[in-house]
Length: 202
Image (cartoon, rainbow, N blue to C red; front, side, top):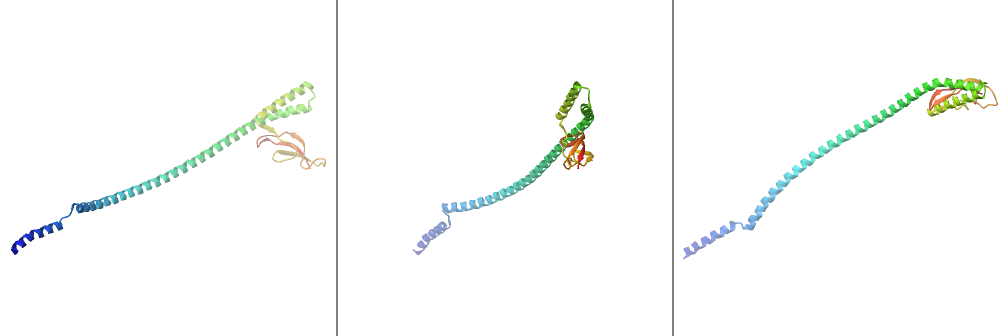
């Protein structure tokens, strides 16, 4: 009878052992989730490293592009400055050439004006002759004005505009006062075409 009890007890023990070692579905699912979560984490780490490397590469490319853009911008600004300087030089040279050419032409015309003024000053041919000379001179001065040429003022002596060929001591005049003009001076802007020939007092 004892043997029968033992025999019946053995299967129960064996069954208990199997139940103790076997995992429940929930436990299996938990283990599976743990394995999946480790794989996902490893995959996520790899993806992060890949993104990080890509960001570093993009950053380097942006820095290189920024340097290139800066260099191009500097070259552009330098080129524009050089062009502006060239344009100014060309304009100044053009103006200087025009003024020089005009001065040469006016220099040739001035003796004619001088002769007409002398004829007007000392001529005694009559009223019609005087009127004709005055009209001719007026026309000449009109042309000079259109060309931007003006007569140099002759009140006080200035070596930048006047050529003193005579000097006189006279207390009735102020110091450096121009007493007489022998020949008018002309200028265009700041350029002297001909200095005024004058007599200066004191």
